[in-house]
Image (cartoon, rainbow, N blue to C red; front, side):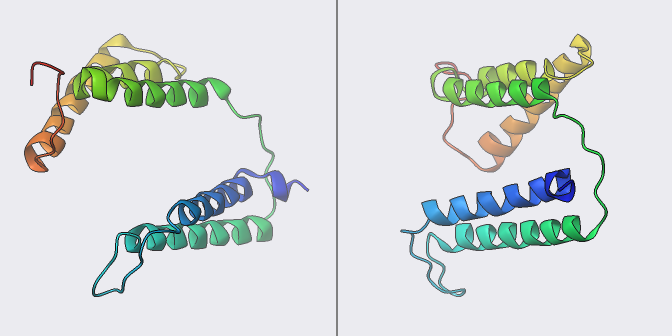
Length: 149
């Protein structure tokens, strides 16, 4: 019973569940062929890879002796989830930089050690990298700060 509650087993089941969910939502997309890929080709292949990796993790978890598991730490999980939801809600209305700042601040509050200087440095570096990658490199039509840039 302890093997079925191990972190490895549960993470493998999670991978399989995510893969099945991706297949379910992408069921209406045309697959195409390897040479002429349709819009559903890459999502389907990624879902299959995710399910295969999940299967391997599950098998390994069942074959190795179980470890003593501790209760999950809910504060980091909750704060990161809240940060992602806030990012999604702010991205359209405020822009990339404000949404990113809120995400980093809220997610950082989930950790055991909160150091303001590290969080501020994180915000600056990630903001610069996101602007370089998404706005300059990929030329995506996103607002960095709504109404300004």
